Image (cartoon, rainbow, N blue to C red; front, side):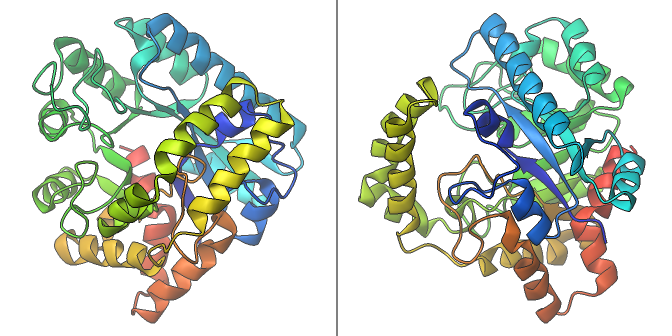
Length: 355
């Protein structure tokens, strides 16, 4: 079984001077944890904040790419890049972890399709079309005011070009209207690399049952996110009432601005510890979301996209990626066969990559 996590925001942490060779208590992902967790590969997502304009976003994406390339080069005895399932399986045979690349937010592309090809040539194999704000491609699920009512005219061109290149379209973060537009215009299966089920946790970032059915009918897959707010809507109030989310935003911003400052790093780590001390939902709710998808559309349309290193709090019992075997053990206890687990672990996602 090849275990793939389709969404980790680790590149942002590399830019904040994380050494992936070191087992860091406050890291969700590093090579020692990946080895303990028997995780064979992951998409390292190049997360681009929506606040950056096109040119700033492009430069930032390139900085993230350089950081990942440097980290893989420094750990060449443990990891290697992959762009398809064949690469990944070959890497595993050599005892190497596979680093795939995704771009979280299409804003660096601007309105230039040549930049899409640039990122493809650099190894990027999916793009999350937008993040928490509307952009030149489509509307986000987050803002009340929408810009396009779905995909923009350029977004429709982009979808066609992504299909042509063989680059996956990630529908996480986009508005419901944008989602249905993507399915209308894409000729290839699309993926939600880190999303959950709205029927179990009523959040606009999650997918409705109708959306999941439509995704599956088009051959796609939803990769279940581990963020407690998305797996259990009641945790939203726990986090809000604590005041730690707002406090954490300012402390984290100071750390991001100067990651070499040890005092700022420690201040951010203290906030992380305080948030983790809150009463958090169990990791077993991740399995509930997997169950829901399987009951709705079958075993061929679900997988795992943790969002590790991009979430400030994790479920109880799934504090970092080293604990991944617990989730598979829980699924075994619920009656999933080894064939089923292999599909959830990577085969469903790899099928989409093959178009």
